Image (cartoon, rainbow, N blue to C red):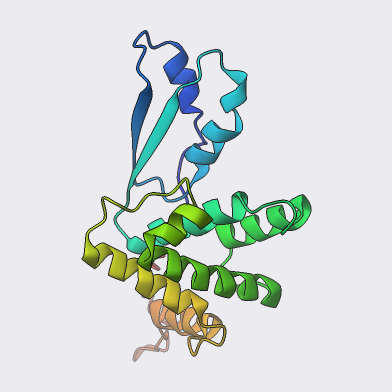
Length: 194
């Protein structure tokens, strides 16, 4: 599943009831699948009396999910001079929830993926382009995996046809019904795992 099962949470609400007066608070997000909690907390940050520095640590099973979260954050924090609010929302929602994207969105993903390749391989560029993202705790192997994901996304013309793949997967899962000797079609049960 590429999006989470719960509603977004403003972690600052939990911190308002917390008595500890630390300079920074570290929050670990396990398997959220997207950046909804981070964006919710950041967008409502100004509403709270006590404002502390919050560090988010993200742990995901798949490197593609971390790459997707970085792309979503990059899109959300794109300067308004570069991308208008309406266009930004349309792009963000399309990246968030669709496997088939418009050509305009595919071009945007390709361009941003090329920037993110440079950001993953050059930390000075990462601090310039996405100062809110820190990859210092990543191992070299994990950085290489991120780079592979971004390289795949940067290719505009993919040989992978998702519509054809989905159709063949459904046909294989549903199977072919065969008649038996009595002329009655037997009931064959197969389950479709998505």
